[in-house]
Image (cartoon, rainbow over all chains, first blue to last red; front, side, top):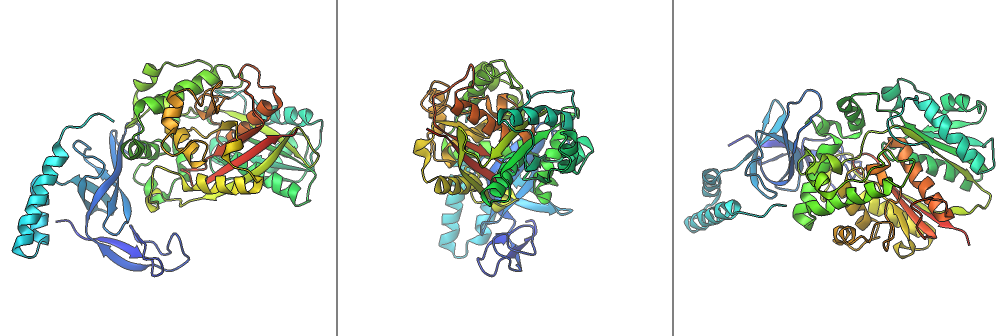
Length: 142
Length: 365
């Protein structure tokens, strides 16, 4: 698993932002340091075919929402199989965020680790299988 | 205003082409003050101090002049500054001039300069305006059920309007298939969903004296510079706040608006903005477009000028050009694309919807 992500939280409205900021975007209040698990859901994504100087085409970009509501931009190797709502893991390499689509086994392992009691483990595996099948179902074009 | 498009003239010359028309139209040759809008002339043209530069160029060197900037909505910000100065009793007349000159640069370079209005962290990921618009478009399609056909029909409609506007950058109609099959820029956004890089200038004379058309309301709305700080990609809070402020000031609502100029820098933004301003009920803008309701001749003509898509988008000129078009429409002098209206609405987006404006104009009885 990738490392936890550094974030900051507003002591007044509890809003969390990544990367950490000194002041809350909504209040002139100093933010407190926080960390977030490197997992989230894709809010949206695109492939830029004429990226600005310093980037190679095609440039895959995603906006990912982490637990707690913080959103961050990520680069990715590809967007094949990525959908809005896809579960992804996020990793910071030289302080640049990258997303990777979590495969079936990644998700199963994650649920296994998170689930505490035995009954919950079985339910979690079940959910993971269902989600895997659900995400692979064919869909019409947008 | 000048014809928009690829122009050989430099920016002061373009502004000097637009300004005298506005002054003579108002029957004045010397305003009390000058407000200039230019988003980034330092980088586009290498020149600054545009208030004084234009004052001297226009033969108005001793007229007090300022420059105003709110990214791509700078033109309306300048109108606001002029309006506020008159409303406060500081001046009796203000000449507002906005323009941009960009087409002499390679598109990636111009696009990079426009992109300086994006949050620095997000920009470090290679996000440009089209990239962010691509993300928004995908979310719009997924969450609101907007279709490729609907966002493409906006381009078809606005090109058809532009074909009837001698000031437009693009004066040729386009076919729906051509839009839908144009090359991908930022998936799912295609080339013909994006406005061009244009040169041009527009001017407006504001005066305390009663004239045929008056500003009934002007409202500004703000949002976070960072797109990642927002919770919803499919509406622009800054437009909603601006619209509320404008309606409150005017003392009437969307129901009285009969023509609109909307900031369609990317065609899906026209659909979002029609709903944000309350001109079309939530979720109905795509359908209304396919049904021809927003075309000239429809229930609510939107962008009779061709919009940013076809008239073109010389950044700081655009907000003023929208109000010039509405003035012509309300006066009944928009030859070839005239609609029947007494109240018009203009909506302008600054940056990626960080600093938006809604202006309501009304023809006097």
